Image (cartoon, rainbow, N blue to C red; front, top):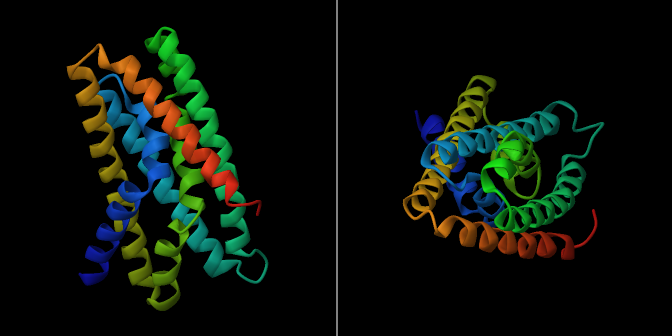
Length: 194
């Protein structure tokens, strides 16, 4: 039971405490609560799967692939992805938001997957996997994945609900979140190449 609770806590805390996570989700979760929940859940699923995949690579292929190198490359790519999301958000704030955001909703899983494979996220999946028995590893990673999905769905719903409550705010929020995504992306790139 402790393994399950730890997995839930680690998944939820990690996904909502990363400024890069919030900067990546905000521009694509705006407009409505339902859309925010849906996009947040997709992003959380991608993030949780990214962590699980890095954890599995760390366990199964550690002699062939260095998970730290894979994480560093992913982190570098996150910087470019955040800049791309930011530019898209700034452009979308100037155009018809309904058309612009519909196309990019499907990118949420991919963005989450990339973020899950980058930075310290893999440590939450990898460290317990190295010390726990196999059955507990599965329980922990399953709880982590479930919690990541639920936490980001809640965050996306909160963003979408707030923006949907004040329709005039959506364009400004889209522009601000785009600017923040660009700044966070530039910071990620400034930490150096992998």
